[in-house]
Length: 214
Image (cartoon, rainbow, N blue to C red; front, side, top):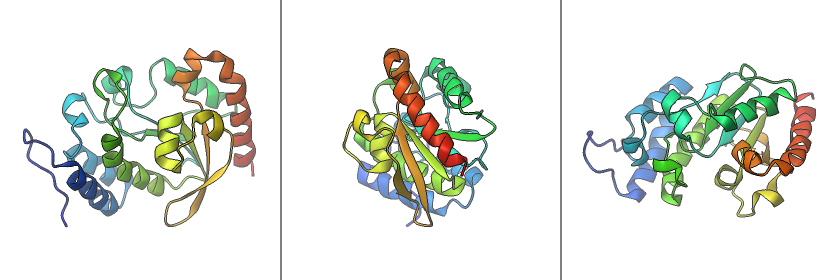
């Protein structure tokens, strides 16, 4: 079935229809640019109406490592890039500690539009956006996938456990075409609130560096 893209101003389709439409649309995107254009015209997620702009990705689409957070915040909504506020600066320092920068990584979020007031995305909003981030991962085709924080870890790695139990353990992420090595670690925003966990996050980063060195 063709993607359901209502004209601007009309209410979004009901959740099940929006999820089906997202799956159908995401599958048809042959490139990252096509996927971005699809998201620009996709009206199945109400978050788009309240956000300033689409926050699609930053970094190098040819990178061997892809990092995925939950959703954009205020700074990201203004600039149209993921991880540009305080947590973005910390993320830059984290990847810098293992010899990487934004030219060597690819960064995205499960949700590409800022939720109003930075509220937590609803399970329904996550389900609608999930086919797009899954397709984005498939098109980037990294060797290592890093989920940052609980929401992106639970959404992408299919676990219900908290980040304390999931972090630092390697698991398989299946794109349908190949299996990518995946690992969860703390979201930089969480580390800003709880700096004592930076030590554990450093262990995760070293583990990532070891795998990338192979």
